[in-house]
Image (cartoon, rainbow, N blue to C red; front, top):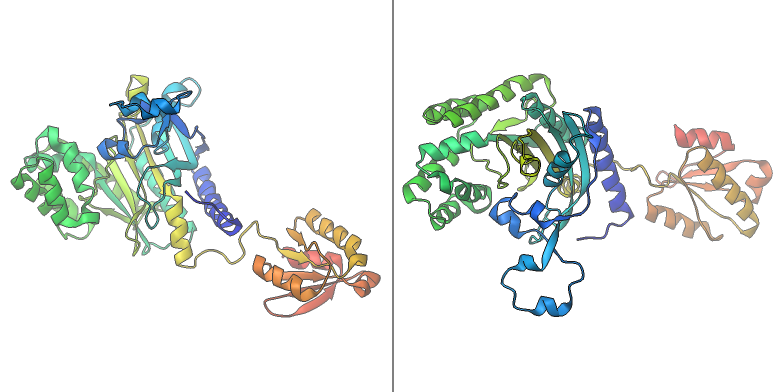
Length: 441
């Protein structure tokens, strides 16, 4: 969990601003939920490994002595937890407020989530997710919408189609592959947890974990042969999977849905960056259909993901309500933009000009000038101490303020100001109206 200095906050606001602009343009509306949820709301939704990463919050009013007792069940001490993601809170809201939201509910949510994870590059215990979800429709146009919005955000941030890929798979395809490889139904979820680590621990590590999870050696080897294949191009992957999955109805249905998505994506922002990848598993157990993940070229970790989860809301509402969504990881996107020097030089929110103070006698004029500039919509900083210009210029450089205003006794007497560009060293003496025009053009 980190502090964010002003430069960090401005970079974050820049990215969030683009995300909100794109999400809103697709018709999504904002939602916010509490950082803390009931523990029984969170548990059982993320799979065995996800549940272990939930920060539990001790019951209200418990005493220290209670903690020190030998209590076998840790849940007797905790009845709440910090949210692990934004999808389960959405499912609770969709179930709780059915009468207050449209039948097809399009929401976006940009808030922090918490995981008791081991910190690493691009991985933190508190981090922001930028979610968008559509609740209430089973149509595949929903998948196209969320994939298109995610692709458009990345494009607006400056990433090209060579910089990122939207990997696609389907839980039906994974189920079908388990069938044809002889994995018993009771072992499927366990096998998926291991397969989801393929890009992290490699085929040998996954095979070892599969065997540790009780998957027969023959079945484990069959799965790895499928998932480690180097088949390239969506059409080749579809052809190959079609042959493998023919005995499985669930597998063929899932493959047909992904074919539809790829064929219909031609006129969408996601066109050209969708890649069918049968090894994509995504460890969260609530997915029921198509699943997605953002792979950034040369980054090594996912920058976002999502999928269809038609059963999750039913855990709270008692009836099946379809849903599908996508989440972009704010921290990882910011890290990439910084590493690749992709942020604009002049981020919105930074001061555009510094008003210097020549002496105590010019203080009143300086205050009035700063006020006039702010009234014209210009972000103007006022140096608080009259004195040498060198000191004030150094302050401007530290703040990343390129232009400064000089107004000594001579300028005040003539009713003009001097606008200096610290980057080029040039300066010109102008009227206040001319200065405003130069700063706003």
